[in-house]
Image (cartoon, rainbow over all chains, first blue to last red; front, side):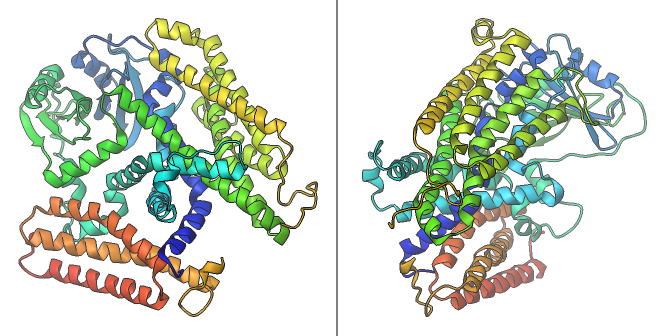
Length: 513
Length: 107
């Protein structure tokens, strides 16, 4: 492309950033939220803010689950982050979800929200576009772009060590932006590269199925079945009650050296050929192990044990580095901070591009500039404001809310997208104070979210902390901190005289540069 | 963009840039699948369990894709990039298919 390798990389870095920056910010933001998805779930589902249960009787849970009459069902067992049993049933291929109280085995009220685990998290890995897996492919493209940005960023950045200690605040704004971009980039480099690569490695069956199908040409066997474990047998058509799940869980735990199960699945429930699968807990390891033990339902006899070979163990380890499901609070916060730093990196990169081009493009009368600017504002501050709108809607919509044929859970998602789209429109139509106004919106939104949680549930941060609901208290405190940062940013942006904005008819004529 | 005087005889036209992007993304993907498939079949032939061979080759595909991408962006001659990527994709995919179909393949 260019004469020198750094020049080629400069071109790649600039244009990849401009084209994919907004998408990358959305993925990083949603991924950062997903680090604390269970805690956000507790915040959004007040009925599930339970004290952790001492022991969980699987047989008591199974009683409730078999009463649903579903032939296939499963449950995710409580952890120190999730005090509830998340059950699901499958009837004719359709999933239904119900939460159980681990102390009693009784169903909890339908939370009427998709929370974080069913909205922020799938947004992070699929953009909620499931058709032909387009969303996952866009995410894959963004992950490759992130790695290309990491490499090209290092190549074009000649003073990488010196600039690590350089942050020139108060000088020229674009200089500060670039310094911030460089510091965030260097500091986050290992994390950003690792997180992009591990995300791709997790989805090998989605992104490079051609490599697997060449050694799995025949129907009847598949890479995913061999790789992730799979056991199947047909129903016998003869009714028989399920044996004791607790006894099976003890046997599974013995085989795993004391590790407990995280997921229990029952297939052909109530049939003589029923079988029960136990997936190994992830709390004590980085690896997202696919170790599983499968028992005969009625008798509890061991049918199959899945263990992975070295390569799939490597794949599970790399996936585990991405998912961070292990029990380690300092590391979890480090993931969260690294995610936020990634958001700063992406936003300052886009901002630097805008700041360094505005003048020249205005003189040239280029039309693309206002568009990129509006997209950048909507994708960054707009995305944060939309997230807060989703949380506020969750707290303020009545329990039985429904409008225009949409359920309460869907209305929350409407709140997210309406605010997000409105923020793009606002940035495009009223560009002069757009950054400041949206920062004010974030500050106000954060305060409203915290207040609405306190009013509707009584769990203001102090109260929540005193009764051990650290997830809820932490969520409120992070929002208060974030809202304060947004308020400071808004005040400083407001005091400054309006920036020159390309395409703004009110902008004064520029002196020749 | 004065420094963007490329060695392929002048400025990069829009067609050049689109062509280079096609080589660096879809072309690169076909080449990566070819290299990965060839590696998976060869490892399986050499006695590795096929799930393990496929997993290793699949994971290596991402660094391969990244390196080819960076090279395709920088390659001085666009035509050469296309010959290497396009030709490599055809050759590796054909070789993998031939190896997979030949007797003696662990299957």
